[in-house]
Length: 97
Image (cartoon, rainbow, N blue to C red; front, side, top):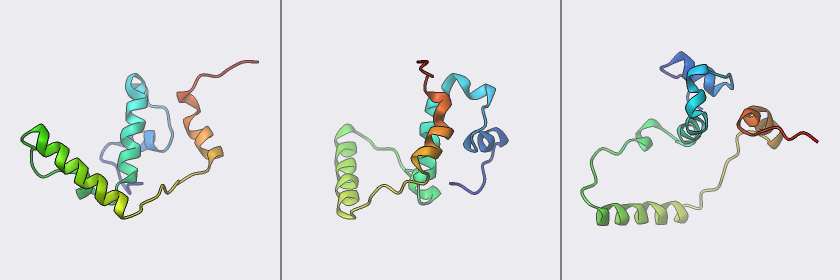
């Protein structure tokens, strides 16, 4: 998890607080935070140039895919299932018996 967020509301949202301004795009915001938290450093999130065409994009993503698989990376879960249920409960509807 990043040590510090530029925006106070983003830090509160990442901590699990409900932010009124984020309600319309809450699921997308969680996805973006997951990407941000999974990144080893800020530079890995930034591409320093535009990719000129679809063929180059396909070649580069294939190379990244091969490199990632070759390094045998695995998922490093940062919280337990119980913690996930607490943190993400507002994203899923409650089913009454």
